Amino acid sequence: MRKRVLPLVLAFIMALGTLVIASPATIYANDEISVTIDGVAVEIDGQQPTIIDGRTLVPVRDVFEELGFVVEWNGALQRVTLTRPSHTVIITIGQTSFTVVTTYATSHQLDVSAQIINGSTMLPIRAIIESIGYRLDWDSSTRTIQISRPMQDQPAQQEEQPTVAVEPVSIMRNGIEVVRADETGVHILERVLLTQEEIQSLIPLAKTAEETRMSAHPNRAMTAQELIAWNQEYNCLGGLNRVELEVLYLLNDIRAEHNLQPFVLCPALNRAARLQTNLMVDHSFFAHDDPFYGRPTDRALLFDSALANRVRPFVSENAAGASNSNTATTSWMNSSGHRAQILNASINYIGIGNTGARTATKFNAQ
Image 1 (cartoon, one colour):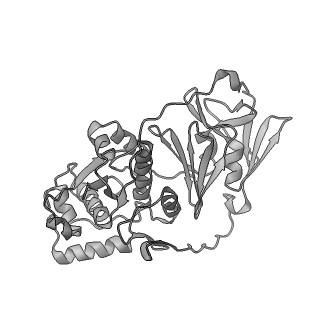
Image 2: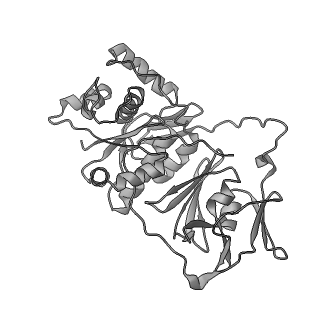
Image 3: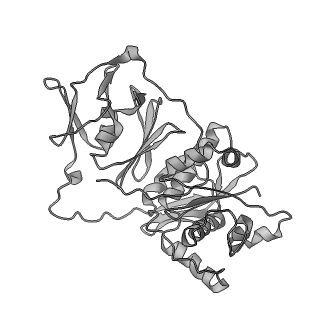
């Protein structure tokens, strides 16, 4: 099962990591190791499974795409993200722990870290497979890794499985509900500083970019009544989508690596960023200024009139074009201007918008 990747435009992200190359002294050539999933052999191109310090590492795409995961590689953070409806697995090259997100995030330990060998990303297979509830056996006589999926994950189902109700999530700050996530999506109710664990727990509950696609923007500025309707549609479609949450997670991860405070998520800036992505897609342009509202600050004022009361209201914006969030964030960190925005210690508020083919971020230092 492969997921169609939507092109998107984002606005910031990630610090360049260092490739971790496994030491030749610890690698043992095992070109006869094979992998099966439910008894069916997995065809492996390029780098073959390899044993390092007693643990078998396998090429990520060959195995996990066969298991139905979407595999995304973030070169800047040296991070692999494996995604399917029931699980999100996040593994970083060179680290001895990884994260699994279901309805909440859990950390798991590794005896041998993920590594890059001959240009291929190699993952320690047993720990990751068992963390998602699959079974792994080793047949020493045939040197075969045997992966077995639980019955509910078998690809050929005769009857449709009943839908599992989404357990609502409510995040509180000082007795006030600031985030509500349920079957309708993820709704940011107040400005909030989310922990990385909270963001990870929200991602599986968020709607996709396709599900949150707004109606086409008219060929003019919206009236006051149309703006009200636009806000209602934003909420009805699911609020913050999955890509937008992933961007927030990655940006705050980068900030932490540079000893900077994480961004505070702002509902008004989220909407201003989503509006900009709509405008760029619907009217086929790529720029910070649009033909109907003007500058990034002008668009932010549509959703936060309090900005007008400040002496120097200022909202900055980043945008980039890429096929997925990882590629986009890498390009931002490779751009001096975008990188400066991300690593500016005086900027503390952020809003993120994604409309499939475009992603934008808004920043505010106030």
